Length: 375
Image (cartoon, rainbow, N blue to C red; front, top):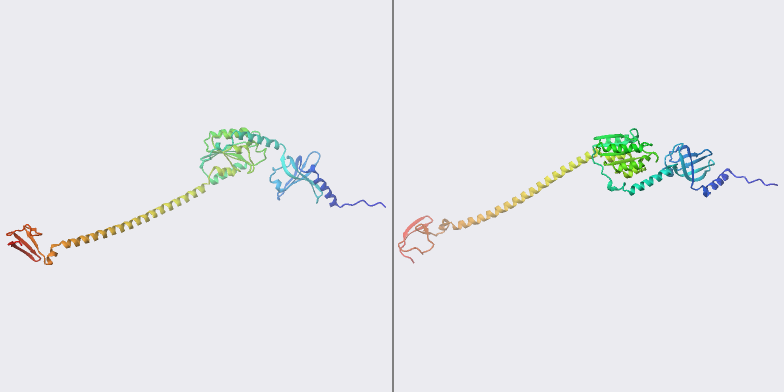
């Protein structure tokens, strides 16, 4: 009796096919080119889409960890994908798990970018020794960008909010397309003759192709030759162009460029007020300190004068005592007398001879006499 053939479950078949695909070395890191369709950027950060050509269509998924580094895609883009083939078992669909995306032709642009960067760097166009300082308080600012894009709005709003003085000269510039490089070079030369203090050059974000005018050699040399400092702001924060390397300052966004060019006037005024308060406090402290020193000197001088006065007073008292000791009236009260000859006090008998007229002074009067005899 013939045996029934083995019966597999849907899951068993699906998992078998899954292993066949995922274990095939030729399908690991495989590269696939095609046109993007059915594109969905999910709020989770994952990207779901398909690539197709005239013969077939391939489902794709790119998880958030890879999607954040990939260029933005849109339906109809020609892309080259790299990734691994897998099977999504719940639906029984085979799909490509994408790890990187590049738009077709972008590889050539990257190569051109790298070669030009190496060339200009070897010539010294990126050297910090040639970077010009941005003026602290610019009076005239030139902005070279599209007059209709978001970049010019962000720049003007930021300057008005932070500075709101001086003059902003907008030079409408083509920043995308075949005329872009020539327009940038032309307006950079024009800005040299306008007497501006600083130039903002840039645009909003975009693909590598969109930003390519800022990777042109003519633009780089025009920036390097500018006698006016230039702040570049091309694309988003993660975008870098040759113009960014040559410019005197690279800003991550147009708003950041405006913040680099003009100071926050309110913050400056606040700082000046703070300095004024500190200065006043310092002056008052110095005055108080000097007053204290003066008071100290005055007190010490008063002490010295008092001490000097006491010393002199003591000396005077001594002199008074000495004078009193020499006062003849005081001596006479003690029973002594003074003898005068011809009005001169006699200290001894020398000079006095018999027959001389002398005068004797007592405490209560005088006596005149004649000398009879010396003994």
